[in-house]
Length: 165
Figure (spheres, rainbow, N blue to C red):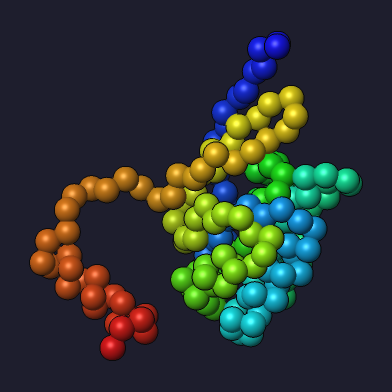
Protein backbone atom coordinates (compact mmCIF):
# COMPACT_ATOMS: atom_id res chain seq x y z
CA UNK A 1 0.00 0.00 0.00
CA UNK A 2 1.57 3.36 -0.98
CA UNK A 3 2.25 6.01 1.63
CA UNK A 4 -0.03 8.99 1.22
CA UNK A 5 0.72 12.54 2.23
CA UNK A 6 -1.56 14.78 4.24
CA UNK A 7 -1.06 18.48 4.87
CA UNK A 8 -2.61 20.41 7.75
CA UNK A 9 -3.91 23.92 7.18
CA UNK A 10 -5.43 26.62 9.39
CA UNK A 11 -8.22 28.56 7.73
CA UNK A 12 -9.14 31.78 9.55
CA UNK A 13 -12.80 32.65 9.11
CA UNK A 14 -13.91 36.26 8.87
CA UNK A 15 -17.05 36.72 10.95
CA UNK A 16 -19.06 39.74 9.79
CA UNK A 17 -19.66 42.51 12.35
CA UNK A 18 -22.34 41.68 14.94
CA UNK A 19 -22.76 38.19 13.47
CA UNK A 20 -22.37 34.70 14.89
CA UNK A 21 -21.08 31.58 13.17
CA UNK A 22 -22.19 27.98 13.27
CA UNK A 23 -19.92 25.52 11.46
CA UNK A 24 -21.12 21.99 10.95
CA UNK A 25 -20.86 18.80 8.94
CA UNK A 26 -23.73 17.22 7.05
CA UNK A 27 -24.18 14.63 4.33
CA UNK A 28 -26.79 15.41 1.70
CA UNK A 29 -27.76 18.03 -0.89
CA UNK A 30 -31.01 18.70 1.04
CA UNK A 31 -28.92 20.26 3.83
CA UNK A 32 -29.51 23.78 2.51
CA UNK A 33 -33.30 23.49 2.54
CA UNK A 34 -33.46 21.82 5.94
CA UNK A 35 -31.02 24.22 7.63
CA UNK A 36 -33.00 27.13 6.15
CA UNK A 37 -36.23 25.72 7.59
CA UNK A 38 -34.63 25.03 10.99
CA UNK A 39 -33.50 28.66 11.23
CA UNK A 40 -36.74 30.36 10.17
CA UNK A 41 -38.89 27.93 12.17
CA UNK A 42 -36.86 28.78 15.28
CA UNK A 43 -37.02 32.55 14.84
CA UNK A 44 -38.35 34.16 11.67
CA UNK A 45 -36.59 37.45 12.48
CA UNK A 46 -33.06 35.98 12.41
CA UNK A 47 -31.02 37.32 9.50
CA UNK A 48 -28.77 34.61 8.05
CA UNK A 49 -26.81 33.14 5.19
CA UNK A 50 -25.82 29.51 4.84
CA UNK A 51 -23.50 27.67 2.45
CA UNK A 52 -22.98 23.92 2.04
CA UNK A 53 -20.13 22.19 0.20
CA UNK A 54 -21.28 19.20 -1.81
CA UNK A 55 -18.84 16.27 -1.71
CA UNK A 56 -19.96 14.35 -4.82
CA UNK A 57 -21.58 14.92 -8.20
CA UNK A 58 -20.99 18.50 -9.33
CA UNK A 59 -19.37 19.39 -5.95
CA UNK A 60 -20.99 22.82 -5.83
CA UNK A 61 -21.23 25.29 -2.97
CA UNK A 62 -25.00 25.39 -2.37
CA UNK A 63 -26.27 28.51 -0.59
CA UNK A 64 -29.38 30.26 0.69
CA UNK A 65 -30.54 32.71 3.35
CA UNK A 66 -32.47 35.91 3.84
CA UNK A 67 -29.49 38.31 4.08
CA UNK A 68 -27.35 38.72 0.95
CA UNK A 69 -24.23 39.93 2.79
CA UNK A 70 -24.33 37.00 5.24
CA UNK A 71 -24.97 34.57 2.38
CA UNK A 72 -21.95 35.92 0.49
CA UNK A 73 -19.83 35.65 3.64
CA UNK A 74 -20.97 32.04 4.16
CA UNK A 75 -20.08 31.16 0.56
CA UNK A 76 -16.64 32.77 0.94
CA UNK A 77 -16.01 30.84 4.18
CA UNK A 78 -17.18 27.53 2.70
CA UNK A 79 -14.95 28.11 -0.31
CA UNK A 80 -11.94 28.96 1.89
CA UNK A 81 -12.45 25.80 3.98
CA UNK A 82 -12.85 23.75 0.82
CA UNK A 83 -13.93 20.55 2.60
CA UNK A 84 -16.84 18.46 1.39
CA UNK A 85 -19.99 18.05 3.43
CA UNK A 86 -19.53 21.09 5.64
CA UNK A 87 -21.91 23.99 6.12
CA UNK A 88 -21.27 27.53 7.29
CA UNK A 89 -24.12 29.49 8.83
CA UNK A 90 -23.74 33.19 9.69
CA UNK A 91 -26.56 34.84 11.62
CA UNK A 92 -27.63 38.15 13.14
CA UNK A 93 -30.55 39.14 15.35
CA UNK A 94 -30.46 35.83 17.17
CA UNK A 95 -28.14 33.64 19.19
CA UNK A 96 -26.61 30.29 18.18
CA UNK A 97 -27.80 28.76 21.45
CA UNK A 98 -31.36 29.01 20.11
CA UNK A 99 -30.42 27.10 16.94
CA UNK A 100 -27.95 24.40 17.94
CA UNK A 101 -30.58 21.97 19.21
CA UNK A 102 -32.73 22.48 16.12
CA UNK A 103 -29.72 21.99 13.83
CA UNK A 104 -28.77 18.77 15.63
CA UNK A 105 -32.29 17.52 14.86
CA UNK A 106 -31.84 18.09 11.11
CA UNK A 107 -31.45 14.56 9.67
CA UNK A 108 -28.52 15.53 7.41
CA UNK A 109 -26.49 17.19 10.18
CA UNK A 110 -23.93 14.83 11.68
CA UNK A 111 -21.80 17.25 13.74
CA UNK A 112 -21.46 20.84 14.89
CA UNK A 113 -17.88 22.08 15.19
CA UNK A 114 -18.64 25.45 16.78
CA UNK A 115 -21.27 28.09 17.44
CA UNK A 116 -19.56 31.39 18.25
CA UNK A 117 -18.88 35.06 17.65
CA UNK A 118 -15.21 34.57 18.62
CA UNK A 119 -12.34 34.54 16.15
CA UNK A 120 -12.24 31.06 14.58
CA UNK A 121 -9.56 29.03 12.86
CA UNK A 122 -10.64 25.82 11.14
CA UNK A 123 -8.13 22.96 11.26
CA UNK A 124 -8.24 21.32 7.84
CA UNK A 125 -6.46 18.20 6.57
CA UNK A 126 -5.76 18.07 2.84
CA UNK A 127 -4.87 14.98 0.81
CA UNK A 128 -4.95 14.06 -2.87
CA UNK A 129 -8.64 13.21 -2.45
CA UNK A 130 -9.69 16.55 -0.97
CA UNK A 131 -10.09 18.31 2.35
CA UNK A 132 -11.70 17.48 5.68
CA UNK A 133 -12.31 19.51 8.84
CA UNK A 134 -10.57 18.07 11.89
CA UNK A 135 -11.78 20.69 14.35
CA UNK A 136 -11.69 24.37 15.22
CA UNK A 137 -9.77 26.80 17.36
CA UNK A 138 -12.54 28.93 18.88
CA UNK A 139 -11.44 32.14 20.60
CA UNK A 140 -8.55 32.34 23.05
CA UNK A 141 -7.12 30.06 25.74
CA UNK A 142 -8.16 30.48 29.40
CA UNK A 143 -6.31 33.23 31.30
CA UNK A 144 -7.35 32.34 34.83
CA UNK A 145 -9.98 30.82 37.09
CA UNK A 146 -13.32 32.49 37.78
CA UNK A 147 -13.61 34.16 41.21
CA UNK A 148 -16.71 35.55 42.94
CA UNK A 149 -16.53 38.85 41.02
CA UNK A 150 -16.21 36.92 37.74
CA UNK A 151 -19.19 34.73 38.64
CA UNK A 152 -21.28 37.82 39.41
CA UNK A 153 -20.22 39.45 36.12
CA UNK A 154 -21.29 36.27 34.25
CA UNK A 155 -24.68 36.23 35.98
CA UNK A 156 -25.18 39.96 35.32
CA UNK A 157 -24.31 39.51 31.64
CA UNK A 158 -26.83 36.67 31.21
CA UNK A 159 -29.54 38.87 32.70
CA UNK A 160 -28.50 41.83 30.55
CA UNK A 161 -28.94 39.83 27.32
CA UNK A 162 -32.21 38.26 28.49
CA UNK A 163 -31.20 34.67 29.29
CA UNK A 164 -31.86 34.94 33.01
CA UNK A 165 -34.22 37.04 35.11
